[in-house]
Length: 269
Image (cartoon, rainbow, N blue to C red; front, side, top):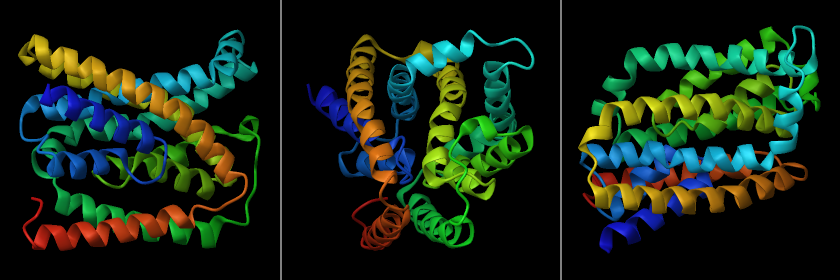
């Protein structure tokens, strides 16, 4: 029963933070430390796989746009251009991730590294707002392969736990000339192949070692993550129509500083 309670907590954290620029992985590591949900290979796989629930929430939220785009997949059509841009943006982090994923899982999944990344990412978001905030391309139809590559390169930052895939791609989108809201939407769509790939890779590595009880806990976390993320996506987009990213940046810096204090105090590892 204790495992299922922890799975619910982790599912809520994942659903709330996957698409906010605050690092879902970082928050999962931090909360995992606090509730002692860490250390075993299953815990790492759980934290990755429940992200699939959040990704399915995005697919459901944008289901009509996705279906329409899939009807226009001939070269030159809008759907073809859209998914080509997504594919180009997906490639850099996929290639780099395959090369260094094992090193990251073994050496960088800790509250200390997450705290550093949260703080650094917060300052990068403030810098992006100040430097690129004057741009305002609202229509993703204006994305080009070159702009998509910029977003894809920026997404590589998210391989460092705590940097945030959402924050990295939104920063990349703003650098490519998108408005904050358009950059966030592109980030949502880019999450589909990115997290599907990460989930598949994780399952292939850890499938045989998962017990029946752990599969049940994984299912609970998956469902909770889906439901919470569905609400979070809608609220986040509504927020961005009226506010900037700086409130999230200040939150990251504050949480990162608090985590550094807790690490040095020996409260978390």
